[in-house]
Length: 364
Image 1: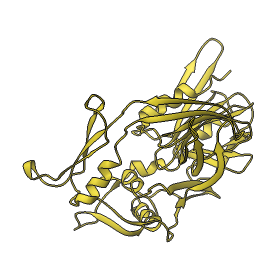
Image 2: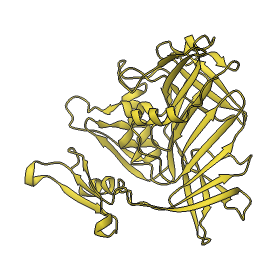
Image 3: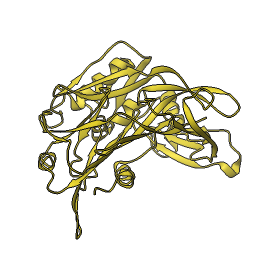
Image 4: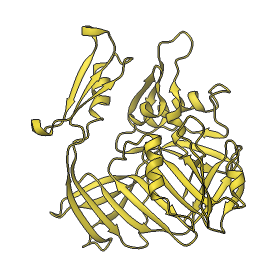
């Protein structure tokens, strides 16, 4: 199976407002409001908050550099910045005869990695860090948005930790996207984690947490399971590396599909000179489709980004898969979370905001 989606009620959450210095300065604990947020595994996430225009915590959220910190009863956290101009921002105000509502859009803590390019140092064609993945990736992140970055590029309060874990990685780029490059080195057992903690954003590469919970009706963890087949999304990718014209480096990665199911795409990486490296990044872009499972989990079962679960299909086949993303909706009365296991959807920020918009409850 390629993924499982589950709707589940989770503990109530407290929605805090933070300022540009990452200090908590307000809460959405009273009055009408709703928040929908998406947290994704090694991919950008985001959030949408709607509240009455006269809500006492709204003004602080609209200050430059502000954001949210959302804390569950179990101590889990999600948060992120209000989306800045030029990065999909579109705060809106809607006035009707009986309602005056402001909607604020934001991004997850990890999303700023996708706002930065890997800019080579003066005199170098590339910026490169080599080592174990949980060390090399944080060091590269620190160079381009942490304390080692220039004042114009560094983000306030980011505390970046490197550790000896993961396979060997060569994190390298020349004006390529920082988030895309770093995410290719996570493999199946690592995830990039950024979380607010005591007025800091703590960034590190962590191990996926394996759980012994089997997802099936027979195991008592699911109320209902629906199995379906998904068509091919992208079966063949041509990777273009360094060089010009007929001398340009080209690799092809393909899934085994019939010609009627072949869907082609291209991956442009002009700075890549290594055939194995280009082949690996190109192959990772294949989306062949396959079997999917949707399961409605029993109440009280908590599943998070950074976990893996044991998933059974109708034939009893077992596969261990990672939690790819969570989509959580919060109102003063309840919190419901939608969980996708497998691979996160490849969403640009504009598409992500539109999706979150559709999932945000109407404020009454």
